[in-house]
Length: 314
Image 1: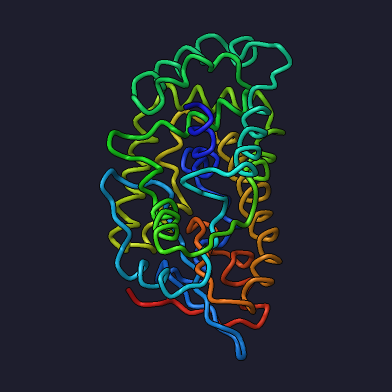
Image 2: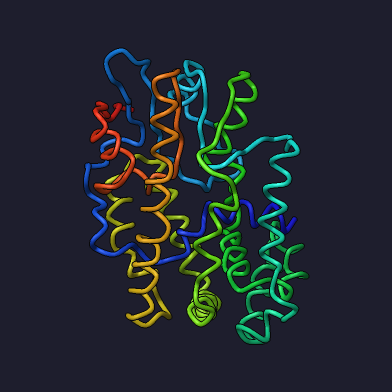
């Protein structure tokens, strides 16, 4: 259970933080659609989909996205999402989980505080989906605990119903090959070097104000699925209302870290593989919608490589 939660939380952690710094241009290009067509003369057309990683129980893949998938030769997601893990996938996830528990023999409570761990354990225990992971919490690293807390979601919300997961299951149903842009340990590396004091402070703030993370998830979900993407982007560019309990300097730290250590490096690291795949076949590339905006987001990077990337009306 803990392994699965860490795996899912790795894709979700940005939801638990304040917005990125103003230097990150959320409004270029204008987010007129979550679906973008990628084209270049002499190459097959592909599509770029900005996803939301959290869904509600019973959610189904939108019909237009399903049709795009059926017309594609390959689905490419951030990380592998097989319903039946193969040996390579299992090794990847096991390696990530192993690092999350490499705390040098120290208990988490001795590092971030007994009260912090007790409060987080109480939060994890309150939900059936995370209750089983609470028992091993004190053996985790601070960064592992930080990722694990992102698994706490409002009742009825789950990563299993996120657009990415729905796409992965549909691809298996239609026997469409799937690939990924990175491995699970690639996701966790930026978290492993975070200062322990910052992690302890953020977990404490979320323990004191658990309602704000739930409210943020619910609002982001509503905006994404109602097509109010520009409003979603505005919320992402200034989510100060969800920063309760953090002093300004800490908010600034997390903003800078997210921009410089998470989004920008991932976008740049993914581009070579995307450029390698585009000429070969019709791809549906599905990544979190936060990876689309900014001059160094995937849309603008592809345009600078000579691709026409245009929004698709839904």
